[in-house]
Length: 475
Image 1 (cartoon, helix red, strand yellow):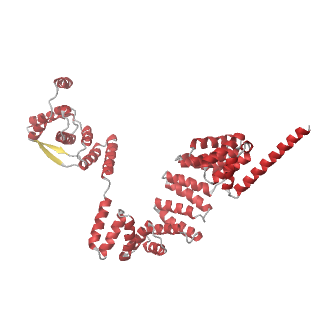
Image 2 (image 1 turned 120 degrees about the vertical axis):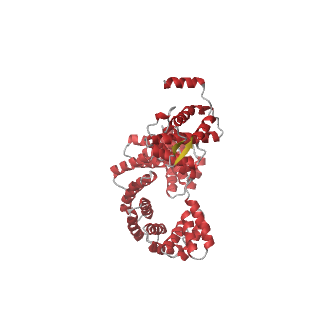
Image 3 (image 1 turned 45 degrees about the horizontal axis):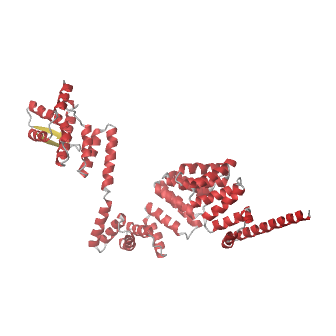
């Protein structure tokens, strides 16, 4: 009996020792002395590994030192000891996010919600996770649900605004930022997000942004970001003298950021201070020599003052920068033409395709698209009216001439021979020596019967079986 009591006393004492040790470790964690705690990790006993508080404290220390992989391992041990512990499920899920283990984080957070669907931390972290993953609609729904359950929050409205910004739904973003700002007007970062969004929308929002700037600067008078925001708001509202005064102060204080140089110089220029505008615009140019507006204003300022030769160079660069991307411009023409064609607006579609071809004469496929809209089949009499006939003749002659010039395989061109022969026969029976053609851009031209005959002769002969089949159709 005495032996049993002794064993129990020893076990009790051992438990007290482990409890005291884990308490000491937690105290070190609370004091942010993480290294002292992690040093204990290399000498853990089996009893230590079975103690929840010890393993949790070491996990917290590793997390505090941003060593998330090690923290995840210790937290996993804790969860294995208490699989329904809500706090540890949340902690382990948070650590999984930091490790990029998204599926594990979702699984753990949803396990929390299966036990407590309104758990704020799990819902909030899941919303943030969806936001990080780009599922902004899901994140917005979850943030709103949190506000329905727990009341409105400046931080949550800010997150919703950020989601709408990512979705490029700026009016909705501005509304959310404003709701957040109304609850926390001392937050300079929040005020800046609201101002930038309002300036992006433009219109009356630009004017209202100035009022937000003044209120925000009342609480944060020396905040450089807000002062830059106000400078931009003044500039966009064409209050150039006021913008110049503000930007001049920023420059004098050593603000050499690109936008301060650019819009500080632009404000001086539009305020009529051309000579003074040169220095900040020159500094902006040195940071970005390709900026069109900087080249344009700097060139103009130099042209109005003393350096005409450099002004010409800069204005030429501005002109070059104003030219649109040829590939994208042509692609846009093609998209517009395709839409018009599908909508049955053939004249507008053919005009756009024709412009597209003139920009890139190698695009036979573009001419082919026009030809499909003015197909006469195999007989000129299939055209509904004289204008369609003229448009059809033009595009067939152009397409086939360009195709033959391209040196591509011409075997399949026999298909177009019957229609041109039909044109030729029609001209013969009408005793006319030339035919009017109408281009997609509205310009008219003439095609002589000789030129038509020469084009027909360049096309391959139609195979006998195809011609026989065609004759049967005509009969």
